[in-house]
Length: 305
Image (cartoon, rainbow, N blue to C red; front, side):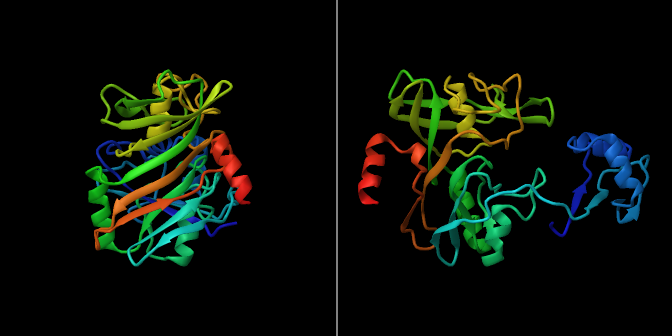
């Protein structure tokens, strides 16, 4: 049981003019209109700090708060490993099943909450899906955050992933360039997927090992679009084994799950950048789980262990 949380939203042009109940049901479709009506009646939802009714008309600039009472969060692995630490940064290894950020019923069972218990000022520079594992980089001070964010935008941060995909790519290496944008989702309104009018994205695919009906691949990216690895591998015709959201081609499956649904193998194994204060190279590595090792690597690990 956590301590509850107060969600705050500033109304923009999309919500201006809508009745409060209509806006909440549209903006947060995980709750039904009946549930939002009950929350409003219980005094959990306020507009500009004042009690509201379902028919309260919203205006641009209004502040809507929802005081969610304490709730039992879904179970998640509540541990992580520190991979790198200095005055400006801390990099950690996120386990499969632990969300990076709050959402979907998770608040304290998140990597952010766990890391902040030890590093209160830490802020994540990026995120990994709940079903993924590997390196997540946090900044510990504002100057480091600004510097590394600029490097990220300029493509000077290198990220490398391991994944298990369906089928066997025709080439041992290839470049995937498929724009990524918002598309309709049956439960969430919209999510990111392959979209010709989306933002540019680039992934470099390398086949490490071909297996029966599957392939072990490594993917390097400089851009960081939401779900980029999953979308690009699907766009190339080789979705992740167990992929619950994206179909071959990079669009959504007919039975599309939520973006955070687990069931696949994706691991952020390396993150490299020039340290913004010293200029020295920082190369952070996180060993993949056994299922994402090649046969040669498994043999070497077995001999070492």
